[in-house]
Length: 332
Image (cartoon, rainbow, N blue to C red; front, side, top):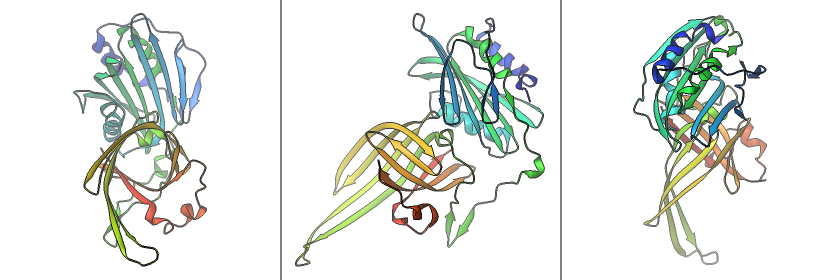
């Protein structure tokens, strides 16, 4: 299904954004990212990550730039409007500054897919630009294309690129089942194992780890006499970008004294192992993933550092290593 069937209004929105169009650029050979087939825009630099491909161009003389990013197929929310809201929040609101948390959108449908497009002005470290997001939804799958540019000359190139995207035909709707409602067991919410391979784009957003308390009592090894107590209360606020960037704002109170730390790095995901790469690598096993209407909950077990081997039982036995389990929450 070619998106050109549904992007006429999208082109109109782009035109209104800058009130002018530039000449279309030449395109090269078709490439593929999962279910997405696309033609790389000529002259742009390609950056490929897991389930994400980006094309960028920067003019050092004029400071004009354009970045077009495709985020490959991931699980949808169940509605096209819900998919757009989630993707806009994760890819635009949480990564840049915009006055529109819920921009006006235009929607079209064909061949089992629904396309929702919208945009607004944004501000980032690169300055003020226009962000346009196209979200394609069908049979439980979502594909997103985000274009960020600060020159009207890029309008037609962005439009031509999006219009040329082709998607594999979605599976028959009879094969799609509605997501099961959350389960409660012994008064606690059940966070099940992921039902699909998670990608870097799935982790984009701001995650919080609930405040935790650790109290350690020390005794004399010989006499058993009390030697003191160490009390630690902490919380983490982690920000992950759609391309794998990572930042952690850590806050703790240790024995009445405040400790703060801010670190940055990147993330990788391989199977059920989420790796946070900074000066070293901290590895976590993903034990639970639950998407709710207002939040995403992830349960991880770890960390294991650098070359430390993760025991097989951590993957196969949910009761093994429960003392290392942590719950991360991302609000939508």
